[in-house]
View 1 (cartoon, rainbow, N blue to C red):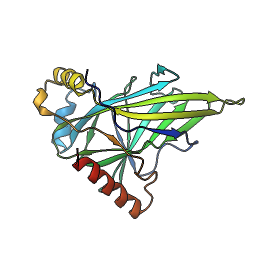
View 2 (cartoon, helix red, strand yellow):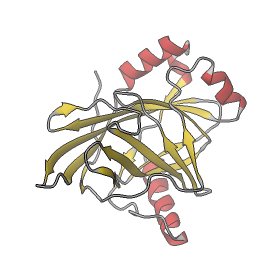
View 3 (cartoon, rainbow, N blue to C red):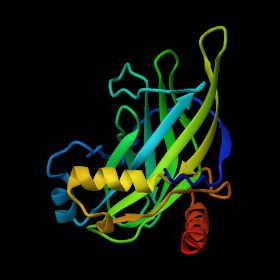
Length: 220
């Protein structure tokens, strides 16, 4: 299996925040939705698929969906119009999202601990969807985490994020499942860069983020 690892970064867990903003939409995981591709294309969007592999203390964690389960939710920010999208993933991190063309950053990964509540990471990762009505594989985001708890149950996590390219196997699996030819699926891998802003609260931060991603993605 082809695996290419890109830059990685160690990030300390940041503390509890509310999960949903008033202007945030949701991208459902379309992996098992019948007819999702046709609906997505009719809306002028593209299918974006890949995986988030979440490892804690050497073991891959199963991701739940209930309010009392452990779960993670990537939060996307589209730089062209500042749209914010909270994304669902499958129980082992697989995802297939309907997204409009644009330049995206994963500005947060929201994290629900069953004992101590809600946290988030800032992984400084971006990707680009160039065209509508296409299928893009954006890679596997792997999180290697080391966790500790204090005496009252508070959680401390150190995480290292890497982007891996499993396109050969992922394209084969997806094309068989969704009846696409391999030639119809384009690889457009996520990238990680420590220079990306950790917040996007100002116009300057949006512009810097877009400039950095333009430089990286155009060189790939």
